[in-house]
Length: 561
Image (cartoon, rainbow, N blue to C red; front, side, top):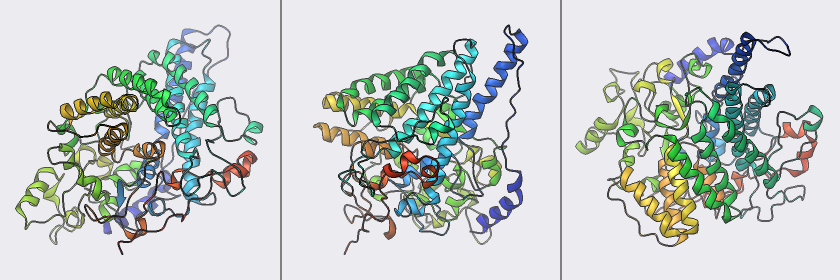
Protein backbone atom coordinates (compact mmCIF):
# COMPACT_ATOMS: atom_id res chain seq x y z
CA UNK A 1 0.00 0.00 0.00
CA UNK A 2 2.85 2.34 0.93
CA UNK A 3 4.45 1.86 -2.47
CA UNK A 4 1.24 2.74 -4.29
CA UNK A 5 1.01 5.91 -2.22
CA UNK A 6 4.55 6.85 -3.25
CA UNK A 7 3.58 6.36 -6.87
CA UNK A 8 0.46 8.50 -6.42
CA UNK A 9 2.65 11.37 -5.23
CA UNK A 10 5.10 10.96 -8.09
CA UNK A 11 2.26 10.80 -10.60
CA UNK A 12 0.68 13.97 -9.28
CA UNK A 13 3.98 15.80 -9.65
CA UNK A 14 4.64 14.62 -13.22
CA UNK A 15 1.12 14.46 -14.66
CA UNK A 16 1.45 17.80 -16.40
CA UNK A 17 4.31 16.55 -18.53
CA UNK A 18 2.67 13.30 -19.61
CA UNK A 19 1.52 14.39 -23.05
CA UNK A 20 2.09 12.84 -26.44
CA UNK A 21 2.82 15.00 -29.43
CA UNK A 22 3.40 14.11 -33.03
CA UNK A 23 5.14 16.16 -35.70
CA UNK A 24 4.15 15.59 -39.31
CA UNK A 25 6.14 17.41 -41.95
CA UNK A 26 4.26 19.16 -44.74
CA UNK A 27 5.10 18.48 -48.36
CA UNK A 28 4.95 20.94 -51.21
CA UNK A 29 2.10 20.34 -53.67
CA UNK A 30 3.38 19.58 -57.14
CA UNK A 31 2.34 17.63 -60.18
CA UNK A 32 5.82 16.22 -60.65
CA UNK A 33 7.29 15.31 -57.30
CA UNK A 34 11.05 15.26 -56.92
CA UNK A 35 12.87 12.37 -55.26
CA UNK A 36 13.39 14.59 -52.22
CA UNK A 37 9.67 15.32 -52.03
CA UNK A 38 8.82 11.62 -52.37
CA UNK A 39 11.15 10.86 -49.47
CA UNK A 40 9.59 13.70 -47.47
CA UNK A 41 6.13 12.34 -48.16
CA UNK A 42 7.14 8.84 -47.13
CA UNK A 43 8.64 10.22 -43.93
CA UNK A 44 5.37 11.97 -43.13
CA UNK A 45 3.39 8.83 -43.81
CA UNK A 46 5.81 6.84 -41.64
CA UNK A 47 5.10 9.25 -38.76
CA UNK A 48 1.40 8.58 -39.16
CA UNK A 49 2.03 4.85 -39.31
CA UNK A 50 4.09 4.71 -36.12
CA UNK A 51 1.45 6.81 -34.40
CA UNK A 52 -1.02 3.92 -34.71
CA UNK A 53 0.74 1.34 -32.48
CA UNK A 54 1.87 4.17 -30.18
CA UNK A 55 -1.76 5.12 -29.58
CA UNK A 56 -2.49 1.64 -28.20
CA UNK A 57 -0.32 2.45 -25.19
CA UNK A 58 -1.71 5.90 -24.37
CA UNK A 59 -2.82 6.21 -20.77
CA UNK A 60 -5.34 8.60 -19.24
CA UNK A 61 -4.17 8.72 -15.63
CA UNK A 62 -6.23 11.82 -14.86
CA UNK A 63 -9.42 9.99 -15.81
CA UNK A 64 -8.68 6.91 -13.70
CA UNK A 65 -5.84 4.53 -13.09
CA UNK A 66 -7.54 1.69 -14.95
CA UNK A 67 -7.09 3.71 -18.14
CA UNK A 68 -3.78 2.42 -19.44
CA UNK A 69 -4.69 1.90 -23.07
CA UNK A 70 -5.60 -1.14 -25.12
CA UNK A 71 -4.13 -3.45 -22.48
CA UNK A 72 -6.80 -2.19 -20.07
CA UNK A 73 -9.55 -3.14 -22.51
CA UNK A 74 -8.00 -6.60 -22.91
CA UNK A 75 -8.09 -6.90 -19.13
CA UNK A 76 -11.71 -5.77 -18.89
CA UNK A 77 -12.67 -8.56 -21.28
CA UNK A 78 -10.84 -11.09 -19.09
CA UNK A 79 -12.38 -9.73 -15.88
CA UNK A 80 -15.81 -10.46 -17.39
CA UNK A 81 -15.05 -14.16 -17.83
CA UNK A 82 -14.84 -16.81 -15.13
CA UNK A 83 -11.12 -17.44 -15.56
CA UNK A 84 -9.37 -14.38 -14.13
CA UNK A 85 -10.13 -12.57 -10.90
CA UNK A 86 -8.83 -9.99 -8.48
CA UNK A 87 -8.93 -10.65 -4.75
CA UNK A 88 -10.16 -7.23 -3.70
CA UNK A 89 -13.54 -5.48 -3.90
CA UNK A 90 -13.29 -1.72 -4.41
CA UNK A 91 -10.39 0.10 -2.78
CA UNK A 92 -7.41 -0.35 -5.13
CA UNK A 93 -9.26 -2.65 -7.54
CA UNK A 94 -10.39 -0.21 -10.20
CA UNK A 95 -11.84 -3.08 -12.25
CA UNK A 96 -14.36 -4.01 -9.55
CA UNK A 97 -17.49 -2.89 -11.37
CA UNK A 98 -16.80 -4.98 -14.46
CA UNK A 99 -16.39 -8.08 -12.29
CA UNK A 100 -19.41 -7.17 -10.12
CA UNK A 101 -21.61 -6.30 -13.12
CA UNK A 102 -22.34 -2.83 -11.81
CA UNK A 103 -22.68 0.50 -13.61
CA UNK A 104 -22.51 -1.01 -17.09
CA UNK A 105 -25.25 1.19 -18.55
CA UNK A 106 -25.03 4.09 -20.98
CA UNK A 107 -24.60 6.80 -18.35
CA UNK A 108 -21.40 5.64 -16.66
CA UNK A 109 -17.78 6.60 -17.19
CA UNK A 110 -16.55 3.01 -17.31
CA UNK A 111 -18.12 2.35 -20.69
CA UNK A 112 -17.23 5.83 -21.89
CA UNK A 113 -13.52 5.14 -21.57
CA UNK A 114 -13.74 2.01 -23.72
CA UNK A 115 -15.82 3.74 -26.37
CA UNK A 116 -13.70 6.88 -26.57
CA UNK A 117 -10.41 4.98 -26.61
CA UNK A 118 -11.60 2.58 -29.32
CA UNK A 119 -12.83 5.28 -31.67
CA UNK A 120 -9.77 7.46 -31.12
CA UNK A 121 -7.73 4.46 -32.18
CA UNK A 122 -9.94 4.04 -35.26
CA UNK A 123 -9.31 7.68 -36.11
CA UNK A 124 -5.53 7.16 -36.08
CA UNK A 125 -5.99 4.50 -38.76
CA UNK A 126 -8.42 6.67 -40.74
CA UNK A 127 -5.92 9.52 -40.79
CA UNK A 128 -3.28 7.43 -42.53
CA UNK A 129 -5.76 5.76 -44.88
CA UNK A 130 -7.11 9.17 -45.88
CA UNK A 131 -3.60 10.50 -46.47
CA UNK A 132 -2.50 7.87 -48.98
CA UNK A 133 -3.94 7.54 -52.46
CA UNK A 134 -3.28 3.95 -53.44
CA UNK A 135 -3.34 4.87 -57.14
CA UNK A 136 -0.35 7.22 -56.83
CA UNK A 137 1.37 5.76 -53.76
CA UNK A 138 4.89 4.43 -53.76
CA UNK A 139 5.42 0.79 -52.83
CA UNK A 140 6.60 1.95 -49.41
CA UNK A 141 3.41 3.94 -48.87
CA UNK A 142 1.34 0.96 -50.01
CA UNK A 143 2.95 -1.04 -47.23
CA UNK A 144 1.98 1.62 -44.71
CA UNK A 145 -1.55 1.61 -46.07
CA UNK A 146 -1.78 -2.17 -45.75
CA UNK A 147 -0.77 -1.94 -42.09
CA UNK A 148 -3.36 0.79 -41.45
CA UNK A 149 -6.12 -1.38 -42.96
CA UNK A 150 -5.03 -4.30 -40.74
CA UNK A 151 -5.08 -2.13 -37.62
CA UNK A 152 -8.53 -0.79 -38.50
CA UNK A 153 -9.83 -4.30 -39.15
CA UNK A 154 -8.53 -5.37 -35.74
CA UNK A 155 -10.29 -2.41 -34.10
CA UNK A 156 -13.66 -3.04 -35.75
CA UNK A 157 -13.47 -6.80 -35.26
CA UNK A 158 -13.03 -6.16 -31.55
CA UNK A 159 -15.81 -3.57 -31.44
CA UNK A 160 -18.20 -5.77 -33.40
CA UNK A 161 -17.67 -8.74 -31.08
CA UNK A 162 -17.87 -6.61 -27.93
CA UNK A 163 -21.00 -4.61 -28.77
CA UNK A 164 -22.96 -6.96 -31.03
CA UNK A 165 -26.11 -7.96 -29.18
CA UNK A 166 -26.52 -11.72 -28.95
CA UNK A 167 -29.51 -13.25 -27.18
CA UNK A 168 -29.05 -14.55 -23.63
CA UNK A 169 -31.24 -15.92 -20.85
CA UNK A 170 -31.72 -12.45 -19.33
CA UNK A 171 -32.72 -10.77 -22.61
CA UNK A 172 -33.79 -13.70 -24.82
CA UNK A 173 -35.85 -11.68 -27.31
CA UNK A 174 -33.18 -9.05 -28.00
CA UNK A 175 -35.49 -6.17 -27.07
CA UNK A 176 -34.13 -3.09 -25.35
CA UNK A 177 -35.90 -0.66 -23.02
CA UNK A 178 -37.26 1.23 -26.04
CA UNK A 179 -38.95 -1.92 -27.32
CA UNK A 180 -36.63 -2.30 -30.29
CA UNK A 181 -34.97 -5.57 -31.25
CA UNK A 182 -31.21 -5.02 -31.40
CA UNK A 183 -30.04 -8.57 -32.05
CA UNK A 184 -27.14 -8.61 -34.51
CA UNK A 185 -26.45 -4.88 -34.31
CA UNK A 186 -22.78 -3.94 -33.84
CA UNK A 187 -21.43 -0.36 -33.83
CA UNK A 188 -21.52 2.65 -36.17
CA UNK A 189 -18.88 2.54 -38.89
CA UNK A 190 -16.65 5.60 -39.06
CA UNK A 191 -14.16 5.45 -41.90
CA UNK A 192 -11.88 7.89 -43.71
CA UNK A 193 -14.83 9.30 -45.68
CA UNK A 194 -17.27 9.83 -42.81
CA UNK A 195 -18.36 13.45 -42.55
CA UNK A 196 -19.61 15.28 -39.50
CA UNK A 197 -23.08 15.28 -41.01
CA UNK A 198 -22.99 11.52 -41.58
CA UNK A 199 -21.67 10.89 -38.07
CA UNK A 200 -24.64 12.76 -36.60
CA UNK A 201 -27.02 10.09 -37.93
CA UNK A 202 -24.89 6.97 -38.13
CA UNK A 203 -26.81 3.84 -37.06
CA UNK A 204 -25.30 0.69 -35.64
CA UNK A 205 -24.13 -1.52 -38.48
CA UNK A 206 -25.78 -4.89 -38.82
CA UNK A 207 -23.58 -7.95 -38.46
CA UNK A 208 -23.73 -8.41 -42.24
CA UNK A 209 -22.74 -4.83 -43.06
CA UNK A 210 -19.94 -4.84 -40.48
CA UNK A 211 -18.66 -8.16 -41.78
CA UNK A 212 -18.53 -6.75 -45.30
CA UNK A 213 -16.65 -3.66 -44.11
CA UNK A 214 -14.07 -5.61 -42.09
CA UNK A 215 -13.47 -8.10 -44.89
CA UNK A 216 -12.88 -5.26 -47.33
CA UNK A 217 -10.19 -3.87 -45.01
CA UNK A 218 -8.64 -7.29 -44.53
CA UNK A 219 -8.52 -7.97 -48.26
CA UNK A 220 -6.83 -4.63 -48.89
CA UNK A 221 -4.38 -5.33 -46.07
CA UNK A 222 -3.59 -8.76 -47.51
CA UNK A 223 -2.90 -7.24 -50.93
CA UNK A 224 -0.79 -4.30 -49.76
CA UNK A 225 1.02 -5.34 -46.60
CA UNK A 226 3.70 -7.37 -48.39
CA UNK A 227 5.14 -3.97 -49.35
CA UNK A 228 5.81 -3.16 -45.70
CA UNK A 229 9.55 -3.15 -45.08
CA UNK A 230 9.52 -2.45 -41.34
CA UNK A 231 10.06 -5.70 -39.44
CA UNK A 232 8.90 -4.48 -36.01
CA UNK A 233 6.33 -6.79 -34.44
CA UNK A 234 4.44 -3.77 -33.15
CA UNK A 235 3.20 -3.59 -36.75
CA UNK A 236 1.07 -6.26 -38.43
CA UNK A 237 2.46 -8.32 -41.27
CA UNK A 238 0.94 -10.90 -43.60
CA UNK A 239 0.81 -13.59 -40.90
CA UNK A 240 -1.19 -11.19 -38.70
CA UNK A 241 -3.62 -10.43 -41.51
CA UNK A 242 -4.16 -14.17 -41.90
CA UNK A 243 -4.65 -14.36 -38.14
CA UNK A 244 -7.23 -11.58 -38.20
CA UNK A 245 -9.05 -13.41 -40.98
CA UNK A 246 -9.05 -16.57 -38.87
CA UNK A 247 -10.63 -14.63 -35.97
CA UNK A 248 -13.04 -12.97 -38.37
CA UNK A 249 -14.32 -16.24 -39.84
CA UNK A 250 -14.68 -17.77 -36.37
CA UNK A 251 -16.89 -14.82 -35.47
CA UNK A 252 -19.05 -15.41 -38.54
CA UNK A 253 -19.12 -19.17 -37.94
CA UNK A 254 -20.81 -18.56 -34.61
CA UNK A 255 -23.97 -17.91 -36.63
CA UNK A 256 -23.19 -19.90 -39.78
CA UNK A 257 -21.04 -23.05 -39.63
CA UNK A 258 -20.04 -22.82 -43.30
CA UNK A 259 -17.36 -20.30 -42.29
CA UNK A 260 -15.40 -22.79 -40.19
CA UNK A 261 -13.62 -24.06 -43.30
CA UNK A 262 -12.27 -20.57 -44.05
CA UNK A 263 -11.33 -20.06 -40.40
CA UNK A 264 -9.28 -23.26 -40.48
CA UNK A 265 -7.66 -22.28 -43.77
CA UNK A 266 -6.54 -18.85 -42.56
CA UNK A 267 -5.42 -20.11 -39.15
CA UNK A 268 -3.17 -22.62 -40.91
CA UNK A 269 -1.88 -19.92 -43.25
CA UNK A 270 -1.16 -17.73 -40.21
CA UNK A 271 0.95 -20.21 -38.25
CA UNK A 272 2.81 -21.24 -41.38
CA UNK A 273 3.54 -17.64 -42.39
CA UNK A 274 4.54 -16.63 -38.85
CA UNK A 275 7.81 -18.48 -39.03
CA UNK A 276 7.95 -19.01 -35.26
CA UNK A 277 7.22 -21.97 -33.00
CA UNK A 278 4.97 -21.93 -29.94
CA UNK A 279 6.66 -20.68 -26.79
CA UNK A 280 8.65 -23.33 -24.92
CA UNK A 281 8.55 -23.98 -21.20
CA UNK A 282 11.78 -21.97 -20.92
CA UNK A 283 10.15 -19.06 -22.75
CA UNK A 284 6.97 -19.13 -20.68
CA UNK A 285 8.57 -19.62 -17.26
CA UNK A 286 11.56 -17.34 -17.70
CA UNK A 287 11.95 -15.03 -14.70
CA UNK A 288 13.26 -12.23 -16.88
CA UNK A 289 11.41 -12.69 -20.19
CA UNK A 290 8.24 -14.63 -19.39
CA UNK A 291 5.45 -13.13 -21.50
CA UNK A 292 7.21 -9.81 -21.92
CA UNK A 293 9.29 -10.65 -25.00
CA UNK A 294 7.63 -9.53 -28.23
CA UNK A 295 10.00 -11.61 -30.36
CA UNK A 296 8.13 -14.75 -29.28
CA UNK A 297 4.81 -13.57 -30.74
CA UNK A 298 3.28 -12.72 -34.08
CA UNK A 299 2.16 -9.26 -32.99
CA UNK A 300 2.34 -7.20 -29.83
CA UNK A 301 2.62 -3.85 -28.13
CA UNK A 302 5.97 -2.63 -26.84
CA UNK A 303 6.37 0.03 -24.19
CA UNK A 304 9.61 1.92 -23.65
CA UNK A 305 10.72 3.96 -20.66
CA UNK A 306 9.82 7.22 -22.45
CA UNK A 307 6.15 6.23 -22.74
CA UNK A 308 3.82 8.28 -20.57
CA UNK A 309 2.27 5.08 -19.20
CA UNK A 310 5.67 3.84 -18.00
CA UNK A 311 6.54 7.23 -16.52
CA UNK A 312 3.40 7.18 -14.37
CA UNK A 313 4.87 4.19 -12.56
CA UNK A 314 1.47 2.62 -11.86
CA UNK A 315 -0.89 3.31 -14.77
CA UNK A 316 0.36 0.59 -17.08
CA UNK A 317 0.24 -3.12 -17.89
CA UNK A 318 3.02 -4.20 -15.51
CA UNK A 319 1.52 -2.35 -12.56
CA UNK A 320 -1.78 -4.17 -13.03
CA UNK A 321 -0.66 -7.57 -14.37
CA UNK A 322 2.65 -8.33 -12.62
CA UNK A 323 2.20 -9.44 -9.03
CA UNK A 324 5.94 -9.60 -8.42
CA UNK A 325 7.02 -6.00 -8.03
CA UNK A 326 7.70 -3.68 -5.11
CA UNK A 327 5.30 -1.10 -6.53
CA UNK A 328 2.08 -1.04 -8.51
CA UNK A 329 -1.51 -2.16 -8.10
CA UNK A 330 -1.21 -5.95 -8.44
CA UNK A 331 1.61 -6.04 -5.93
CA UNK A 332 -0.32 -3.88 -3.46
CA UNK A 333 -3.31 -6.14 -3.08
CA UNK A 334 -5.73 -6.57 -5.98
CA UNK A 335 -3.65 -9.55 -7.12
CA UNK A 336 -4.41 -11.01 -10.51
CA UNK A 337 -5.36 -14.64 -9.92
CA UNK A 338 -6.55 -17.70 -11.85
CA UNK A 339 -9.95 -19.24 -11.14
CA UNK A 340 -9.53 -22.21 -8.78
CA UNK A 341 -11.57 -24.59 -10.91
CA UNK A 342 -9.63 -23.76 -14.05
CA UNK A 343 -6.34 -24.23 -12.21
CA UNK A 344 -7.50 -27.63 -10.94
CA UNK A 345 -7.92 -28.82 -14.53
CA UNK A 346 -4.24 -28.33 -15.40
CA UNK A 347 -2.23 -31.50 -14.69
CA UNK A 348 1.20 -31.19 -13.12
CA UNK A 349 2.92 -32.62 -16.18
CA UNK A 350 1.68 -29.60 -18.15
CA UNK A 351 4.39 -26.98 -17.55
CA UNK A 352 1.83 -24.16 -17.86
CA UNK A 353 0.59 -24.99 -14.35
CA UNK A 354 3.73 -23.30 -13.04
CA UNK A 355 2.57 -19.94 -14.40
CA UNK A 356 0.43 -19.66 -11.24
CA UNK A 357 1.28 -20.28 -7.59
CA UNK A 358 0.07 -23.67 -6.29
CA UNK A 359 -0.70 -22.33 -2.83
CA UNK A 360 0.15 -19.46 -0.50
CA UNK A 361 3.80 -18.85 0.28
CA UNK A 362 5.35 -20.43 3.36
CA UNK A 363 8.82 -21.37 4.50
CA UNK A 364 7.42 -24.14 6.72
CA UNK A 365 6.63 -26.52 3.85
CA UNK A 366 9.73 -27.70 2.00
CA UNK A 367 7.86 -28.51 -1.22
CA UNK A 368 6.12 -25.13 -1.33
CA UNK A 369 9.35 -23.31 -0.60
CA UNK A 370 11.13 -25.30 -3.33
CA UNK A 371 8.43 -24.34 -5.85
CA UNK A 372 8.74 -20.64 -5.05
CA UNK A 373 12.53 -20.83 -5.17
CA UNK A 374 12.32 -22.30 -8.65
CA UNK A 375 9.64 -20.07 -10.15
CA UNK A 376 9.39 -16.81 -8.20
CA UNK A 377 10.97 -13.88 -9.96
CA UNK A 378 12.88 -12.39 -7.03
CA UNK A 379 12.49 -14.38 -3.82
CA UNK A 380 15.68 -12.78 -2.51
CA UNK A 381 13.76 -9.51 -2.29
CA UNK A 382 10.89 -10.79 -0.17
CA UNK A 383 9.19 -8.47 2.30
CA UNK A 384 10.35 -8.67 5.91
CA UNK A 385 10.81 -6.36 8.86
CA UNK A 386 14.38 -5.90 7.67
CA UNK A 387 13.25 -5.37 4.08
CA UNK A 388 10.02 -3.31 4.31
CA UNK A 389 10.09 -2.42 0.61
CA UNK A 390 10.34 -6.03 -0.52
CA UNK A 391 7.85 -8.07 -2.55
CA UNK A 392 4.84 -9.24 -0.55
CA UNK A 393 4.95 -12.90 -1.56
CA UNK A 394 3.37 -13.74 1.82
CA UNK A 395 0.17 -11.89 0.85
CA UNK A 396 -0.37 -13.67 -2.47
CA UNK A 397 -3.30 -16.11 -2.49
CA UNK A 398 -3.15 -19.51 -4.15
CA UNK A 399 -3.21 -19.39 -7.96
CA UNK A 400 -1.62 -15.93 -8.11
CA UNK A 401 -0.26 -15.26 -11.59
CA UNK A 402 3.48 -15.42 -12.29
CA UNK A 403 2.74 -15.51 -16.02
CA UNK A 404 3.51 -11.88 -16.88
CA UNK A 405 6.96 -10.93 -15.65
CA UNK A 406 8.19 -7.34 -15.30
CA UNK A 407 10.57 -6.36 -18.10
CA UNK A 408 14.08 -7.76 -17.61
CA UNK A 409 12.79 -9.41 -14.45
CA UNK A 410 13.28 -6.09 -12.69
CA UNK A 411 10.93 -5.95 -9.72
CA UNK A 412 12.05 -2.61 -8.28
CA UNK A 413 12.60 0.07 -10.93
CA UNK A 414 9.30 0.97 -12.58
CA UNK A 415 10.94 2.69 -15.55
CA UNK A 416 12.72 -0.58 -16.40
CA UNK A 417 10.02 -3.03 -15.35
CA UNK A 418 7.24 -1.11 -17.05
CA UNK A 419 8.95 -1.10 -20.45
CA UNK A 420 7.36 -4.44 -21.22
CA UNK A 421 5.60 -6.02 -24.17
CA UNK A 422 1.94 -7.06 -24.36
CA UNK A 423 0.72 -9.88 -26.66
CA UNK A 424 -1.79 -9.03 -29.37
CA UNK A 425 -1.55 -12.27 -31.35
CA UNK A 426 0.38 -15.46 -30.74
CA UNK A 427 0.90 -18.41 -33.01
CA UNK A 428 -0.58 -20.69 -30.32
CA UNK A 429 -3.97 -19.04 -30.82
CA UNK A 430 -3.86 -19.97 -34.48
CA UNK A 431 -3.31 -23.65 -33.66
CA UNK A 432 -6.33 -23.62 -31.36
CA UNK A 433 -8.50 -21.85 -33.93
CA UNK A 434 -7.38 -24.41 -36.53
CA UNK A 435 -8.26 -27.30 -34.22
CA UNK A 436 -11.64 -25.88 -33.21
CA UNK A 437 -12.68 -24.95 -36.73
CA UNK A 438 -11.91 -28.50 -37.89
CA UNK A 439 -13.68 -30.02 -34.88
CA UNK A 440 -16.98 -28.35 -35.72
CA UNK A 441 -16.96 -30.18 -39.05
CA UNK A 442 -15.00 -33.33 -38.18
CA UNK A 443 -14.52 -33.87 -34.42
CA UNK A 444 -11.92 -36.60 -34.89
CA UNK A 445 -9.79 -34.34 -37.09
CA UNK A 446 -9.99 -31.44 -34.65
CA UNK A 447 -9.11 -33.77 -31.76
CA UNK A 448 -6.09 -35.08 -33.64
CA UNK A 449 -4.79 -31.53 -34.21
CA UNK A 450 -5.30 -30.69 -30.53
CA UNK A 451 -3.53 -33.83 -29.34
CA UNK A 452 -0.63 -33.25 -31.69
CA UNK A 453 -0.18 -29.67 -30.48
CA UNK A 454 -0.50 -30.52 -26.80
CA UNK A 455 1.86 -33.50 -26.90
CA UNK A 456 4.49 -31.66 -28.91
CA UNK A 457 4.40 -28.29 -27.20
CA UNK A 458 2.71 -28.48 -23.78
CA UNK A 459 2.42 -31.93 -22.21
CA UNK A 460 3.95 -35.09 -23.66
CA UNK A 461 1.49 -37.17 -21.63
CA UNK A 462 -1.60 -35.29 -22.77
CA UNK A 463 -4.69 -37.30 -23.59
CA UNK A 464 -8.42 -36.64 -23.81
CA UNK A 465 -11.44 -38.88 -23.95
CA UNK A 466 -13.52 -36.33 -25.89
CA UNK A 467 -15.24 -37.76 -28.98
CA UNK A 468 -18.37 -35.78 -29.89
CA UNK A 469 -18.29 -32.33 -31.48
CA UNK A 470 -19.38 -30.68 -28.23
CA UNK A 471 -16.84 -32.60 -26.14
CA UNK A 472 -13.93 -31.94 -28.49
CA UNK A 473 -14.77 -28.25 -28.89
CA UNK A 474 -15.10 -27.85 -25.11
CA UNK A 475 -11.71 -29.49 -24.60
CA UNK A 476 -10.09 -27.27 -27.23
CA UNK A 477 -11.57 -24.16 -25.62
CA UNK A 478 -10.41 -25.34 -22.19
CA UNK A 479 -6.82 -25.63 -23.40
CA UNK A 480 -7.11 -22.31 -25.23
CA UNK A 481 -8.40 -20.62 -22.06
CA UNK A 482 -5.37 -21.87 -20.15
CA UNK A 483 -2.98 -20.90 -22.96
CA UNK A 484 -4.30 -17.38 -23.56
CA UNK A 485 -5.19 -16.59 -19.95
CA UNK A 486 -4.84 -12.85 -19.33
CA UNK A 487 -4.52 -12.00 -23.03
CA UNK A 488 -8.06 -10.74 -23.62
CA UNK A 489 -9.30 -13.44 -26.01
CA UNK A 490 -11.44 -15.82 -23.91
CA UNK A 491 -14.31 -13.30 -23.76
CA UNK A 492 -14.87 -13.70 -27.50
CA UNK A 493 -15.05 -17.50 -27.35
CA UNK A 494 -17.52 -17.51 -24.46
CA UNK A 495 -19.78 -15.04 -26.21
CA UNK A 496 -19.49 -16.68 -29.62
CA UNK A 497 -20.15 -20.22 -28.38
CA UNK A 498 -22.88 -19.25 -25.89
CA UNK A 499 -20.86 -20.72 -23.01
CA UNK A 500 -21.67 -20.20 -19.34
CA UNK A 501 -19.58 -18.32 -16.79
CA UNK A 502 -19.41 -20.14 -13.44
CA UNK A 503 -17.81 -18.35 -10.49
CA UNK A 504 -19.74 -19.85 -7.58
CA UNK A 505 -19.05 -23.50 -6.77
CA UNK A 506 -18.08 -25.81 -3.92
CA UNK A 507 -17.03 -28.88 -5.89
CA UNK A 508 -14.68 -30.31 -7.06
CA UNK A 509 -12.81 -27.41 -5.46
CA UNK A 510 -14.02 -24.40 -3.53
CA UNK A 511 -14.46 -21.12 -5.38
CA UNK A 512 -11.84 -18.42 -4.85
CA UNK A 513 -14.02 -15.58 -6.15
CA UNK A 514 -15.11 -12.88 -3.71
CA UNK A 515 -18.81 -13.12 -2.80
CA UNK A 516 -19.66 -9.95 -4.75
CA UNK A 517 -18.33 -11.50 -7.98
CA UNK A 518 -19.91 -14.96 -7.67
CA UNK A 519 -22.31 -15.06 -10.59
CA UNK A 520 -23.29 -18.20 -12.48
CA UNK A 521 -24.83 -17.72 -15.89
CA UNK A 522 -26.80 -20.10 -18.07
CA UNK A 523 -25.15 -19.53 -21.44
CA UNK A 524 -23.39 -16.31 -22.44
CA UNK A 525 -23.63 -13.54 -19.82
CA UNK A 526 -25.83 -10.55 -20.55
CA UNK A 527 -22.89 -8.29 -19.61
CA UNK A 528 -20.94 -9.43 -22.69
CA UNK A 529 -23.21 -7.28 -24.86
CA UNK A 530 -21.51 -3.98 -24.10
CA UNK A 531 -23.67 -0.86 -23.92
CA UNK A 532 -22.97 2.20 -26.09
CA UNK A 533 -22.42 5.27 -23.94
CA UNK A 534 -24.75 8.26 -23.87
CA UNK A 535 -22.06 10.62 -25.12
CA UNK A 536 -22.38 8.86 -28.49
CA UNK A 537 -26.15 9.23 -28.41
CA UNK A 538 -25.78 12.94 -27.69
CA UNK A 539 -24.09 13.48 -31.05
CA UNK A 540 -25.45 10.51 -33.01
CA UNK A 541 -29.22 10.31 -32.75
CA UNK A 542 -29.39 7.05 -34.70
CA UNK A 543 -28.12 4.96 -31.79
CA UNK A 544 -30.35 6.39 -29.06
CA UNK A 545 -33.31 4.03 -29.43
CA UNK A 546 -31.21 1.09 -30.57
CA UNK A 547 -28.82 0.61 -27.67
CA UNK A 548 -28.23 -2.67 -25.89
CA UNK A 549 -30.21 -3.25 -22.69
CA UNK A 550 -28.35 -2.46 -19.48
CA UNK A 551 -27.09 -5.75 -17.95
CA UNK A 552 -26.18 -4.23 -14.57
CA UNK A 553 -27.43 -6.21 -11.60
CA UNK A 554 -29.15 -8.88 -13.67
CA UNK A 555 -27.63 -11.85 -11.79
CA UNK A 556 -27.86 -12.91 -8.15
CA UNK A 557 -24.74 -13.76 -6.20
CA UNK A 558 -24.23 -17.49 -5.76
CA UNK A 559 -24.27 -18.77 -2.21
CA UNK A 560 -23.26 -22.20 -0.95
CA UNK A 561 -26.14 -22.16 1.56
